Image (cartoon, rainbow, N blue to C red):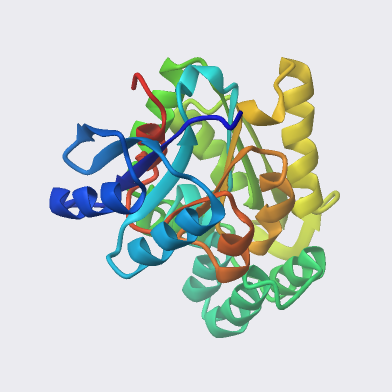
Length: 287
């Protein structure tokens, strides 16, 4: 017997006439309005053909969709794991450091190729980018944090909802501890991991201290937390946007591509291209 599924349709300024059309496409047995931006269509068909039809239909109407097993509450999950750059926050920190130091074009080109999956070795790409920052004043890091770094829409609501439901929050980044540590203090994150930039005499040396935190390390940190908590794959939400997030996302039943590169969107179970990060909360019943 297959598990019943609901279909959540959402977008800023959701037209509920569109939701009714989606209900017909998916043979929904009812509908619940979650809020002004989301609706839950009940007991829908969820075979491969229906899923593809809904995917194509939503793509042409700027709607996010998610087929969710009926009865899932957020409290039934144990972990929310997130990437930092271009997921929790609006920027790629290394690109902004480079831009403020006049080295932006070189670094950004490597970043974009790595996130698209065109550069397969993330550690190599990060090493090359950090090397270009040799001699940059460390004070630029603070400027990036204050002047350029912003939380993506819905970040604080998502984290508050996760915390209220008892989830542990994990931020794992191929970026830098300068930023993850500040975000941990600001947002009350349970655990953060990232790379440490070497700084000598107030300047970046162009090197990272210790082993580079790459995609495999992201997955290891998530698995280690899951082991400590006794959490199973179906109790994990993992969100990311780039190719180096995929190994981490594979450890989660709720793998979420956030405004993601095509290679990530193709492999993730879910995607948010229009709703805020807190769109995840709408998937679960009782929130």
